[in-house]
Structures are given as C-alpha cells and as structure tokens.
Figure (tube, rainbow over the protein chains, first blue to last red):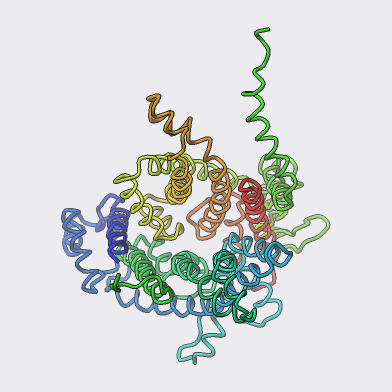
Length: 309
Length: 289
C-alpha cells in the first residue's frame, strides 16, 4: 500500500513537470499572439498560472485529493465531469474485454501446460506471442474490415444511440474489445502456463496423485488454485497497458472514453485535462495493484495480512 | 614460433558463438522470423530504387484504383501506388525504432548493472523510479511528452528510450544479481579493479544473452509504439509513406470499400512485429538452454 502511494506520488511529480515543461505562458497560448498583454495577464491570474511552480503543484495535488481537478483550457469548464463520463465509458469497454480475455487466457495457458512441449503448446505460445505484439489499431482495422464491412456482423462505431439498453451497448462494444483481448491473451496465457507447470511439478501434486485422487480432482483442487496466483498479479499490471491501447481503440471506433479524452486533450494542448486524465490512470494503476495484492492474499493461505505469526 | 595462436583463449569464445548460431539455425521460429525481418530490412535499404512507381508521385486521375496488373496493391487517395509505398514505408520505422531500442538498451544496461552491483539504497531508489515509469503505458507517456515538447522524431526517440530503459534495467538487474556473488567478481574486486571495469568488462559479457533477448523483444514493442504514435499523428510525419501514417490517412475510406488503401500496410506492420517476435522467441529458447 505504501509502495503504491509512493509510486503514485512520484508519478504526480513526473506528470506535473511533464505538463509544465512547456514555457509557462498559458494565457498567451490560449488567447493567441495578437491578444492584449493585459488580457493575457488577467487570464493567467484567473487560472493561477502566474504563481510559482511549487505552489501550483501543491494546489493541483490538493485539488486532486478533494475532487477538484481544475478547469479545462479548451472547454473553460471543470475537468471532473468530462473525466467521470470518460472513465465510465472506458470501464464498460475494459469490462467487456476482461470478461472475454481472462477465461480465454487462463484456458489457453492451462491447455498449453497440460500439453507441454507438444504441438498445441507451441501453437498457443506462438499465436499468443504474435497477438500480443500486433498494434491494436492494426488488428482493429482488420476486424472492422472483416466483421464490420464485409460480413456486416457488428457495427463499426462503438457509440450507441442515447438511451440504448445494456444489450445494444454490449453489441457495440464487442468489436472494439477484441483487439484488447488479442493483446492481453498472450500475457495471461503465458503466466497461467508458467504457474500451471510449476504447480504440476510440485510435490503436493505428486502427493495428491499418489494418494489416489482422480486426475480432474488433482487439477481442479490442487493445481489450478496454486497455478493462478501469479496470473492475478499479471492481470492487474496489464490493466494499465490496456488503457494505453484504449487511446487507439477509442479513436478508431469513435468512442468517448479516457483514451480519447487524453488524446483530444493532447491535440488541443489542454494541460489540466491531460494531467487529470493521465493522473487518473496512475491512480487506477495503484488501485488495481493494491486490489490484486489483497486478492492474492485472500487466495493464498500462506499470506495473511495482520495474521498471527 | 611467436606467431602461433594461443589455442585455448582464441578458440573458446569463437566456439561459443558458432555453437549458438548453429543452434539458432535449428530453431524454426528464429529462421522464419529472421527471413521476414531481413525482407523488410532489404525493403528499407534498397526499396526506393526497386519499386515500380515513385511512392511520392501523385496521379489524381488514377486515385483509389483497385489492385490490378499495373498497380498490384491499387492506388491511394492521391493516386500513389500502394505497393511502392508499402515497400518504401519500411524505411522510417526501421530507422526510428532500432535507434530508440539501442538507446534504451544502453541506458537500461548501465542502470541495471549499477542497481544489481551496488544494491542497497541506489537499488531501492532506482527500483521505485522504475515502478513509477512502468505505471504508465508508453503511449500515454509519449502523448504527455510530445504535447509538452512538440511533435518531433527526436522526442519519439527519447520517450521510447526512457520508457523502455527501466524494463531492460529490470532484466539486467536480476541477471546481475545472480552474478555478483560468483568468484570471478570477488577475484576482480580483490585485484582492486576499477568499478567500471568490473561492471562492463567482467560482468556485462556474462549477462549478454538475457540482454540480447530483451532488446529484441523491446525492438518489437518499439515498432509497435512508433507505428501507434504515427497512426494518432504524433509519430512519423507526412509525406513519409510510413505504414502507420498511411493507415491513419486512409482508414476513413474503408467504409467506402477501398480496403486496399489500408489492408496491405496493416499486414506489413503485423508481419514485421511478428517476425521480430519469432526471432526473440527462437533466441530465448536457444540461449536459455
């Protein structure tokens, strides 16, 4: 937990400095080179961008902790509502991707481990590895071509009409989720395979077999539970990489999520929006890491927080 | 008889490399991957002089023509020959991505050697910084940096170098940790060798295999990242026939049925990254034996 907070703090400094590398005259940048100097000064004063860096940083962090994320330069209105809508939309897309990829990845890893060294294992590993390195926009466009335009099975835009039911929303999100599934499948399958192999070779598995348990029972009760522990931490760290992929996917499928928010903010040089977007990803990373640690401890009888020694 | 080679010293490393190479040639993934990668490297180097059309020449009378015997992959919006553009399109990405990877390898190796060798506070502090950098996806870091510094190939290089270096550092660090307790390091320390000598002359050659594998894997991701940044307009800039850039300029047309303007660029990117990954996969399973 401390580690996650420390990481988050370092990240906030990096992000803040990143946003302030640009020579600081925000008012001039917004009003353009022809604007009156007095107007620029007034605007800078209003937005607080004429204060020392440290003061601005502390103010930004304090605002972040109290839910005040500042004013967007581009929209001249608070950042928070934009961010909330975007996060909610991205969460839906990410949820669809996770619901598809976690069982698939684990299944792939388990099958590969059970057929270790044979054709199924090699094919799964090469396919998984290859899928992991093809950029999302490439697989996304090929998917749009095949399933959106040639076969017409899925809509090519992820945005649904207002008031659409959950099923319609889901229908719109399946095609955008698949490139993310492809990226994550390889990672999850590789970790699940490694965990499975370690558990299969462990003494307790041999004991379970030797005491006469049936094969499915051994796999289900003794191997899987131990094998999937490391996979949980991988799934947690990959969440963040999933967000990197969201930038491209959301642009490609015209979807208003956190990725397209960050992209638009970057295009418009809207630093408060950009910083808030990037910082929320950092916070998300810290949160998922923390939750994964908790889940790990919950599933692993050898780790108990605050337990008796 | 002074010019006789000293057989033991000369033969040992040569044998090691030959042996590795021979075993690599036996790896199917390595060979297939290497053929794909070499094909694209060939296109990047010689493509411009071999292609049937000038990849930059507009021909508005013949825009968006489907693939034919004259234009094998059809023509794009401006009537440029897609086949020629795909071949020459390998050039920029195969310049930027390897340089970025090389920079990150140098940085990451130096950092990893230091972290692993000294341990203690240096290791603690650097590990935390590494974690902080790894907490963000590279594309996001790049967007932040490119917005702050302005879009340029140099910034892309620096961003990739700095975001990949920690990953390489982590690999190098764990490889170094298993080396520092070995006798040869202690011997070098007893001889009072310079620290830099111990790090780069004694330890580095022994941790080369994992560095080579990690560098190859990173090269794949550097291409991934450069292509993605070019696609969203923050990477390689027009009028380059770069694949990501061409896809970005033409993907709006696929709804109209003009699939050839993007599909071949997509296949080019996919084949290159998969090829590099196959090479890395072959190297990993061969060198780790």
